[in-house]
Image (cartoon, rainbow, N blue to C red):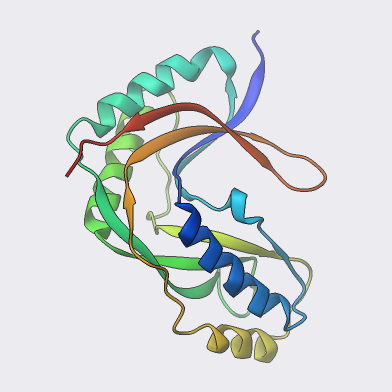
Length: 191
């Protein structure tokens, strides 16, 4: 049995977009909420969480990514609005929504799911909702305080950015937070 690694497939964000997100996190951090904020270098648009994989499967996954992205040109997205999963009563994750060419994003994610299903990675049962995880709730949060915090960033929006490639990342869980490293990258065609 080979070495196991934790992996996922995502779209990376450009530095200026990450900077805007980090400033919004600072605004919310100042409100004293019991939230563990994701470091800006850890923010990405996840398309498929793979979990623990065999390191030997990286090449097969890379080939599936190449197959899934063949029909796709780069497309434009933006971060817009903030919310929580699953809901305000039981918040677990603080997220930023995605707008722009979300149809292309959904189609790309569906094609990836289909290709990876052929390799034994089951399709996600939940409907794909493109988002950026920016915080994880620790313990309980008062609904009123959280609602007020989300109201403070209601009009949040990043600049548009171009999804230019799909990346297979390795995720190393460490005490200071997860550290991500690229295992493979597949560029999308120029629009």
